[in-house]
Image (cartoon, rainbow, N blue to C red):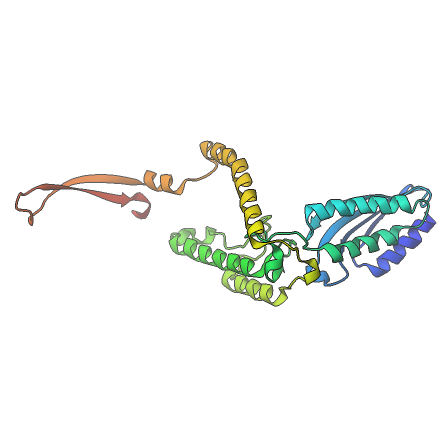
Length: 287
């Protein structure tokens, strides 16, 4: 395994954060590989490289997963090209070549043919932001989402009874994977800080990475995807609602009210007609 160890040492000296596991018959190399250009908001992919005893005569096995910042089509293409690279360089050292190839591919294909995670239109339309969990969206959409989260938290705190205010969740989650992005302490300052950082770190995609497609085509595709998703989720939503897993706010409000029917003689009416008045008393606010 001397040949493999020398190559791994060279890779570790060039790429930060490479994780290496050694055993008698195998070397396992794990690394979240990125484009060498603009690494902070770069696309990434998790590279799992298994180097067997007998390398390079015995080729390594590569597993790519968890793509961020590249579309499904581009990810499949990367997997295919890496397999071709291994086949074409049989019995030759190739660990460094695999790292370099993946990094270069990400540089050339990041955010290509991708849509905003929020509005589902082409990412190339305007500057983008990348969340700490590496989901990409228009910077404008992301900042608007954060402001909406801030508004929602304020409303929930205003509506909550004094002894329940501490139970209101003031954290902000990623709009895609729901990973928590903020701390619960001083949520207003935290959210405004996130908005400021999103604007500061936003980036405009180079023209070479933009997709030549019309706005109408993007919109039609987004609507089609939304309808397909809605069709898929509708029976799941109905089933969860039937089991009580989803709260119907309007139904809960009706359950918390009772009505008193009273008869009031209208003094202003010459016919002395009786008017029925239904008075709704919200039992939630009676305490």
